[in-house]
Length: 204
Image 1 (cartoon, rainbow, N blue to C red):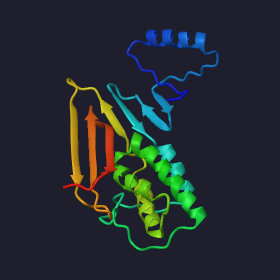
Image 2 (image 1 turned 30 degrees about the vertical axis):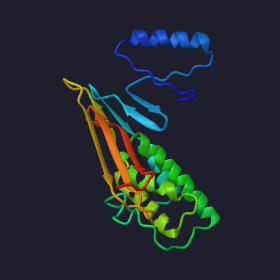
Image 3 (image 1 turned 30 degrees about the horizontal axis):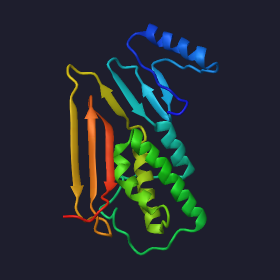
Image 4 (image 1 turned 135 degrees about the vertical axis):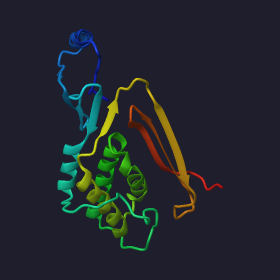
């Protein structure tokens, strides 16, 4: 990822050889190794044999602190998530904070928290002219994260690699009558790819 690189291998000598090669080409190479690693805001925990836990608890707690979140919510959204209701538009400073927070949450959702992806996917469509009602929906996601900040994805090695794929759609749920599609691919008991997006055309 740009100038950050994560390498894994069952043979440490191969990692050492690769590291030596990198340092002959690029003089300034910083290397960190161990059972717990930090990478792109994520914490990768290899302590338990045959599995790795991926979490972003520290990143999430910083985000919650920046937004002064004090309470929790049971779910990331309500049944009114896709409803666009009459509400006052946010002032320029609040709008900028809204946009920044949604972008940071999208970063989290795409990596280790697919459970908030549907709500954040919708809120990304509202960043250009967010209202107080949109802010209420964003606050709901933040309060949900407040109570679930330690949740993680866990990839496990089993006797066989099982790949599971799921997809579903909701018809006409958006205010312009477009539908919404969601899906995920999981391997080793954890989601490795999640999608939640507004459909581009109106169709039956």
